[in-house]
Length: 243
Image (cartoon, rainbow, N blue to C red; front, side):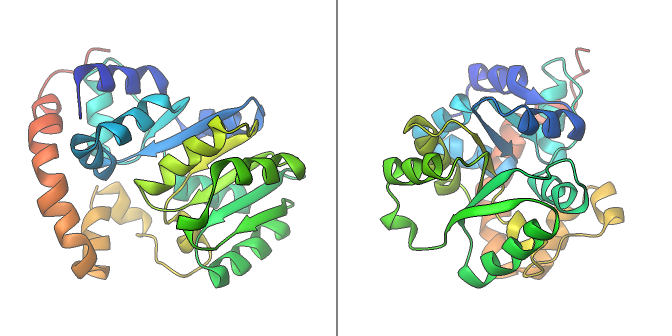
């Protein structure tokens, strides 16, 4: 469930901008970074276990303007920091050159394309598993990651399962960096379309995605997320920021 304590804890762990996100990945200290959007809060409202998964992340990011508004009500002023834009930077730059990466999730053909992109950017994909997620055992996955000396585990599975398996793998002994990016790998590999920059600037990315996948997203946005937005985000949106 969503509590003031959960929101306060999110604010304490919130990464403020893209540069801080990249720095947290590069310092190699064991950690899990969870991007959080309104859908995550909707899931947390229904599941105490998933709310604890958010609490246990070492860092969170405000992935979407509703979460940015919520964080501002807690006295910080984060930028919108998304997993998809992190993947874009990772593929476009050379700051992650030489890192050993692993991919957990996504379809195999998507993983094939994404692996090639990572290699072109100087990352070495040393392990990946695109199998049935019901067959994943956290201890077994963590052991494989340790065997291949993985620096960065990219979890390409949508919430709640993606975030929860990422936390389980870390608890099972993986001492690298875990990043939950949901569908960002599909976008990077060209199997889904990211909203143009001007649409993101107008805070209409949700509408752009709804037009692309109305059958899948209508219920998520209007049945699951809208009540959470009205109850938790909207009151804080009109409240003066504390900073």
